[in-house]
Length: 396
Ligand code: SF4
Ligand code: SF4
Image 1 (tube, protein in one colour):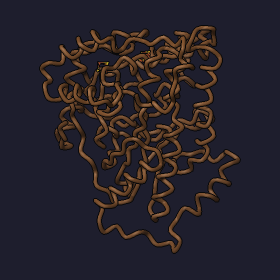
Image 2 (cartoon, protein in one colour):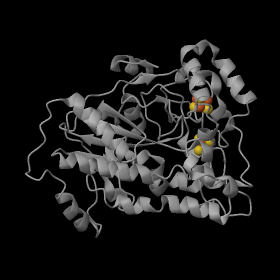
Image 3 (cartoon, protein in one colour):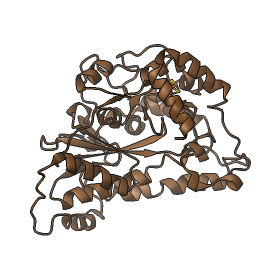
């Protein structure tokens, strides 16, 4: 695995002017105001149906809903976002709790050794539940120019500025289990992408930093900045053809959180472990995507919808058709994550394969072929799932 300088990273991924992106144009927000999109989604069911099919039964659905159920509640606790609305009745309670998050004597910890502080922050993040931790200088290009509060509609469309004192972004990664990913497309496959671990770890690490006497902006819900470029700059992984992060440890099965802070830290270097070359010949996600949202061919800087960011050199992805598919396909999806050859358990065998993928990139067509020969990327039947499932083997 190569460590890149920021100049090398820039050359690899940026090929034009990057304008700060407006959150209003993310699919989660367009869903609220974009009449044309609404029309295209007319009549599609809001959730896949519960049925007698293994993986899609009531018990499977209940696990999916339960896994996500804390997310809106925990969101109320996040007071540090610059554009947080103040209309919620719980705000006063959480503000009072937050007031106590400071050093006992009010003095900041002296940071004589930012290298040691960085090591300690990473240890704390792991203790709070993060699987991966990286640091980067906060690149304001990835901060949303405006945020869009769906509860307030157009009135909640506000410019957003992060003060210059927030010089660093701590990026946390949370691995999704390989085991569950194999049962696609069912509810089981989506239990891993629920965000509950991410929200808690972010909030706890944020509190820890405040107790040291420093400031934080906790970007728990991807609603302050674009998560993936920050994660790449912080050395967590590379961008895949499916427009998601690919990490050496968890492949594409990863969730991200970020904390912006004025705590002096030492940035990590971006990494290159052969993803771009591999995706150039792989195409498994593009071939498997039921909505054809993932493009074949080469990387470009040309956006294909108003929800794409310009200036980045990447395989363009159509979030509109993906979003519509999630509603219209009648099955939970995330097939692109499951079929990705990088999404594998962290066994000696798969680590060895990853080493070869990194070191002998000219042989990538052979590795893709072998992935297919070994039957990876095929869905596993969920008929006996509840008998066989061992949650302790989450990462296997
Ligand atoms: S989630 Fe499904 S529809 Fe969306 S890009 Fe992935 S495979 Fe395609
Ligand atoms: S499935 Fe293949 S092409 Fe798609 S992101 Fe994974 S490695 Fe890249």
